[in-house]
Length: 297
Picture 1 (cartoon, rainbow, N blue to C red):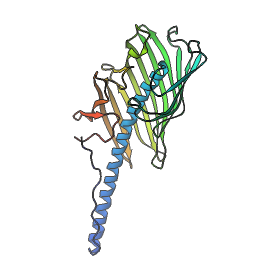
Picture 2: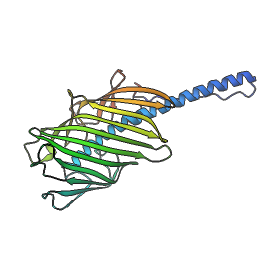
Picture 3: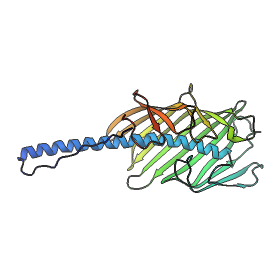
């Protein structure tokens, strides 16, 4: 795919033009420059919002995997007290961890509070809670918590609520707050002790806001189609199927617009490919996370 080149190439003003013509050209160029800047900022906010929605979905999956699995590459896991005694804590430390599954370099700590044995918990029990300590993905600092409640043992169903703040520092830094509310149902792997063969279907919603220079520039909401739930296997880095609808409200220099995006994770193949359609347009194949604004063929 090609990327759109936002903005216009402005010709230099001719110093010998008549004053009226000069003023006219300058006014025209200012209008073009403002429009180009607005389009560029709108495009940037759009891709930021789309990526934030994806990053939070990815964090939902990785936090869930960390909460229930002790295995995995480039992380150190310790327990206080024994993992077989409840309650106990599990501390997961990342040190410049990079792998295909991480979508970035991870540093910092996740602390998992295990309140009750999931195998003997009752419906409604808070069984686990995940918190972050100096945790970053590349330059993005993540804070907040994830709470996991038991809904049912048959089928094994969990209610997962996450509240996060993501901060990209710098003069053009962005602060994003998000809350997710998902139901995860075990659809395969429940008959073995090995969690690597577990497969969950995921439904629910999430919503977030982006703050730039102290003002809200975008907000978004995500709904997973209950008739086409997201499928996430423990042994796959990515979501392999399911459909999410992402609604983004943008505010660029006082100009407001709304995008409705449909993100389809595919046919069950384990890869980072998806299709994305915007405002009812033709679906386009994209690689996640997005590295460009995907409106263009």
